[in-house]
Length: 51
Length: 532
Image (cartoon, rainbow over all chains, first blue to last red; front, side):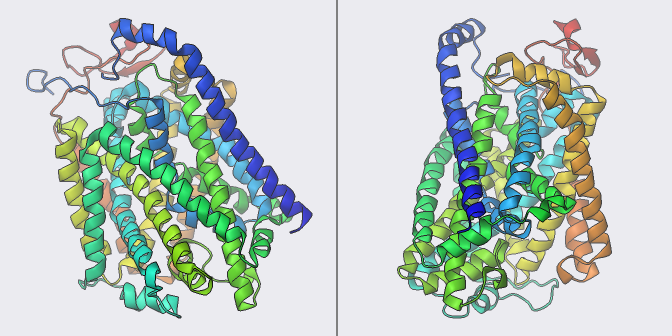
């Protein structure tokens, strides 16, 4: 493979799969840190997803 | 509409949690196009250099419009007709237009899944023989030489198609949690495992490096061509299933205070990650084929779409050791990717009818699914089904979906709704959007879409698509758009059996004017804050 082809393949994979990994980690951290507050809000509001 | 004759809307179904929504949204985004369209589009538009406009298109158009869809569905809580009616009563037709787009796509999408299921079975004994093109077009499809209108049905396709519809109806009738969510939680990991195995096998084939070289070697001069950038924006737009109701419907099943942008980023990156994986798998395999035939990759024909899947790949499967397993992996991957997208398309139509006529999910699935199945068989299981499919697909995607997106963004701009959607996204989401997002969805994306739309309409008017007769393109191409217009008129005029106007969006936001929030069901325009 040419050097530029190898570079582009690695860069694309790193950006996309790295972006996916970071977005999952970020989402999990956010969800965990807001879980307690969210449970309280839901209990107060009775939000079960309905209109 | 009288408030005394229509009952209040029933409780809306909901995802069991964030993961269920994410799997379903990925299932919708990752479809046939990821496997058979992206690699060919990338190769034809600069190879490795295409990665740059593709990533820019994802970040500047794909994700921003995905967030628009999420905000619309989650704030106004319904299928597309309900959502747009709740913004302005006169906009209900736009929701039905998006629903009609999904309905038409469903009709031919199911047929492709039926073909893929048949070929997964054929892989076991390599039934296509030496001449895969002849097998697909003549022995399998019984394709007519010239496009026309026949009433000759292909028996084996009809039966497999009925099986696909039976499975789809079963999933849809089982509801959001037990049907959509559960099927996606099974199908998506299975798809990744099967396709991952296929990619690994492809990488170890002789000639695979040549294929990857062809796919990733950049032609930087291509970046100076506007058509390459338009191809990138067009591809990401179709790939993410945005602006025609699917993500609006799916996000309406999230709870009101759910995180929207965080899961959106996961869905967007997962979709593109799978596409790059598909590019590697497909081109490493094409490299093997080129080496076997002693030609260059550039000399190969059928490197995308139906040709890639049902003519080129069977030929490759026949040439490689252990090809049967490879064939089963490839065609089963197509079935899974297609099925999860088909379910999402059908859910849009089902949800629109549930909302308007107060039907249960099961009743909507049975009625909508049965009608779709009948039309699907009648139109696309005939001997000239491939010609019809090709034409309808072209018009629905490049005129219907792009037109729908332009109108949707124009309406949101004209009604000054974008700041409202921004505030809704930022109220509970992990990733905040701001002026850049407003600029992208308010200026950049509409301009790009408008360019795509004008160029494509001019193209199909000047050049008969795919060499088909003008009357054929008019009947099935413009005819599809005409059919959608008729469906829009009928269902917009139909009487609501529920009360979509008894609704108040949350959280209350300043400067939001929506249609009708009277608790008595009366329709009028009033600022939300005055109601609260």
